[in-house]
Amino acid sequence: GENVEQHPSTLSVQEGDSAVIKCTYSDSASNYFPWYKQELGKRPQLIIDIRSNVGEKKDQRIAVTLNKTAKHFSLHITETQPEDSAVYFCAARSNDYKLSFGAGTTVTVRA
Amino acid sequence: GAVVSQHPSWVICKSGTSVKIECRSLDFQATTMFWYRQFPKQSLMLMATSNEGSKATYEQGVEKDKFLINHASLTLSTLTVTSAHPEDSSFYICSASISGKEQYFGPGTRLTVT
Image 1: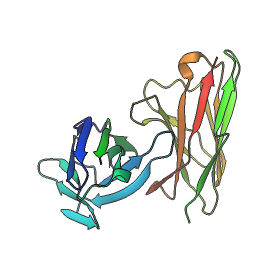
Image 2: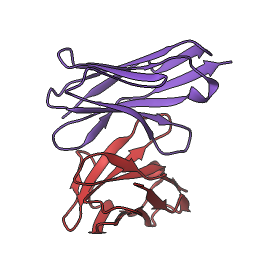
Image 3: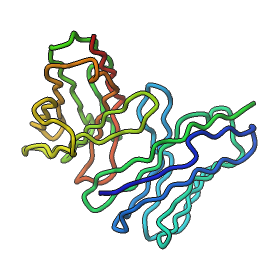
Image 4: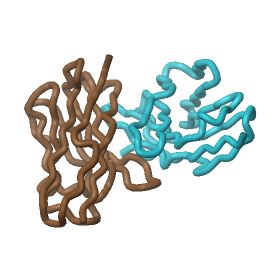
């Protein structure tokens, strides 16, 4: 099955700085890579996603890049704000439609 | 659109009892629903996949006789935790999808077994 690794596990950044989270996956058949933001006790919220036929996608302060050859993808948050503090999960979906999640990154934005 | 609800949002039960959690897609028909378990400070772990009208497919290590899943309609799936033990205490999250594509997550159910 798919195995997704995510780094770092914790990330502390100064407000206004950028945050980068990296993930690798094992199944070359995976073709969809969503990123979720989860606040304590709440459901995961899809913040951005990328499909395997695209190398980069941007939505305002959030961007995702995908390197299919190396089987890794990254989340970039620019101009971080205190409300960006949360746990972020990457995931990969393969042909069976199951999502495999990374271990999560706790992001803390210091004011 | 694409709203998924779960009921109850939290439940406390005694060890040895059973508890049922409902997952509903409110404004779309979900051919596939997924059930996840999330322990504190951990990731979401897929427990099982259920397709409407057929038996659920369980992930390795998940006891199908303990975690009963029913997907009787295109808008409702239920997870019953039977003979609950304290180690079953967790956050249970469902998701619903159309034909297994984008998953829409429910708000989760916090289960505490005393």
